[in-house]
Image (cartoon, rainbow, N blue to C red; front, side, top):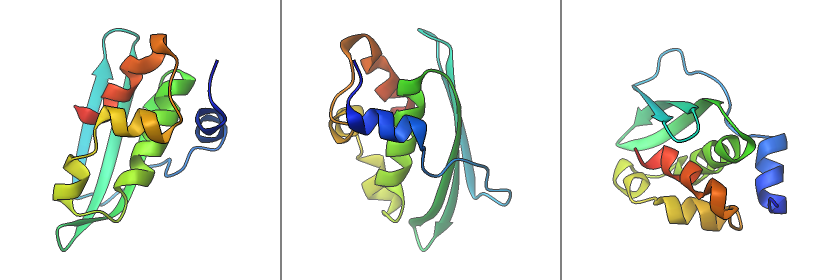
Length: 108
């Protein structure tokens, strides 16, 4: 059902945690399934120097959070804003059709 990449990011998520002195914090929830994501950003010179997340949800939501943080880390804020839910799903080698809505967590 899940790709090897999704399972890898679910079983060993990257960038999990909290940045206590974060420059930005965002929280989103998905009313379709109850997933909740909090993202913490450390910004330096208009770029994402560090990014962490805490996600309560299914395996797909955790994998999406992990992949999104990997894709955004080190990017300029402008480039990070351009990461789409399709970009994240493609980087995860697809998500099952009934879990595609999870890829929207990072876009909100």
